[in-house]
Image (cartoon, rainbow, N blue to C red; front, side, top):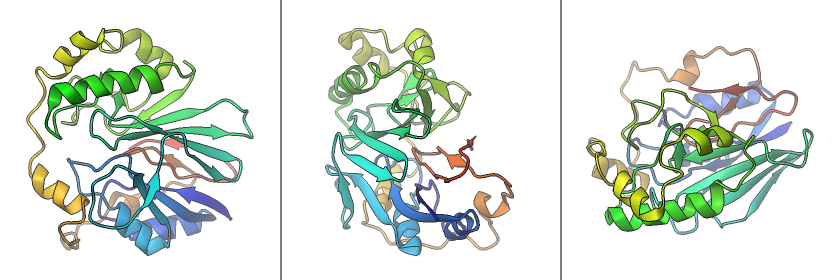
Length: 262
């Protein structure tokens, strides 16, 4: 049985352990790339149901215990390696996850960027306050931790067009680092211009953001979703092993690895 990390963007978590079991997987890690401000994370609930570890970056300000992650830390899952990259800017605790499949080769395969880097855009820096200071941190994180990685890396961000977690997001749910280095209009900017561009023209903050943050920080109790609403996972009948990158997550299968974005 393979081991699998998974992070879920909803509170509809109950079907996930059964899906993993049906695929011959054992859920071992649940990782949130940051304390989300636009949705109630089901990460802690999923970890509880599956008996898995729940992790955030060590700097996360939350009111519950979690397994802390540090910059440069490597998580070993059989032939798979997940390296933690601390990339503050969108939020102080934001991380990216660099994934290598040693059966394919020693070089990294893809990067889960959370809300740090999107297709055609970057994460908004204003949600924690001190927008210009955070924008400068984001520029530094991208320059020091992300842009120097191999250009052939596949990039799976947390959002695409329609999200309020950034401005100008592409409708494309995945990209490559080489494509973003060439065509993302923000990545070639010097720091001061980057700060100005990323702090102007950003969307309104997510509705009920403070309530959502209180929930995700453990300051508000979990509530069951309304009756009659079935989760996407329960409706899905995918016959193949899959890798879900939604919200910086990864579900790993031991026999085949097929990206499925949603």
